[in-house]
Amino acid sequence: MANRESSSGTWARWVGIAVTLLLASLAFAVQSGRVMAKLDGIEKQLGAFTVDLKDMERRTSFLEGRLGSRNP
Image (cartoon, rainbow, N blue to C red):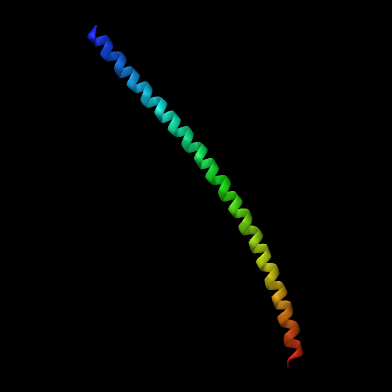
């Protein structure tokens, strides 16, 4: 009888470990998905910033060209 109780206690421990691992894996997957979503948002903002920066450089070079042609 004592052997059966010991056996079911071991089984319950393994089930607890398996459930813990499953929940940890699920939490890791959800968290990594959230991180990837935030990184995508940052990438889009950097892309918009790069476009704005190139536009500003184009305008600056245009103005420098106009000022350069006025002052020989």
